[in-house]
Image (cartoon, rainbow, N blue to C red):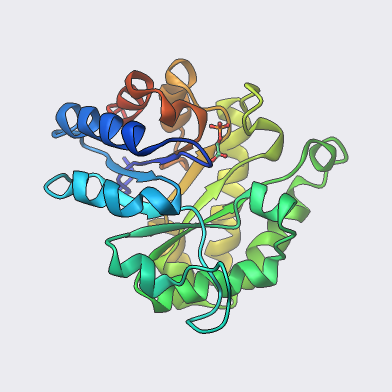
Length: 250
Ligand code: PGA
C-alpha cells in the first residue's frame, strides 16, 4: 500500500459568492470532520478570507487558484505568495490548463510561479496535461516531459510540490480518462522524476483531474500512482464533493 495520503482538492474556478462560500463550507466542515484524506478548497481570491474564517477550526485546508511569479511591487492586479500565506492559504494551483490556454502561461513562467510559491511557504499544485490533438498524434509523453522539465531542475521546489495530471480533453467535458489511461501517465510522470530523484518520486503526490465525479472517482483513486483528485465541477456540488473526500484507498 502506498504511504501517500490521498488529497482531494476542489477548484471552484470563477464560481461562487459569499453565500455559496459560507453554505458549502458549513456543510463540508460538518460532514468531513473525520475524513482520512487531506482536503482543500480553492475559492476565487476575493472569497479566501471569508473561507478562512469559516474553516478556522476545521482540518480542511485553503488554496488559491493562481499567484504572481513576483515577490512584490508594481504588478497591478497580481497577488503574491506572501499575501496568500498571510491570509491562511496552504496550497496554490500553478499552471492550470485554463491559465496556460487563456493567459498564455509558459512552462518557464509556471516554474517561476512554483519557485515563488515555495519561497513564500506555500505548496504548489503543479498542473500538466495534453490536449486532445496532442494525444491523438501520440505526443502525450513529449508534452508531459516538456511540462515537467523546468521543475526537474529545481529539486527542492519539486519536493515541495503536489503534481496534478489533467488531460485538457477531460476538463469540464464529462469525458474522463479511464483509470488505466490516467495510471499510465501518472506512472510515466513518477518514472521521469525517479530517473533523477528516486526518493522524491516515491513521496510526491500526483493527483488526477478531469471530470472526476462520484461515479468514477473510486476506481481512479485506487490506481497505484494516483494520490487523489483535482476536482472542478463536482467540487461545487456539496454531496458529490463529500463523497469524493470519503473515498478510501483499498
Ligand atoms: P473538472 O475540472 O473536474 O470540471 O473537469 C477539473 C479542473 O480543471 O481542475
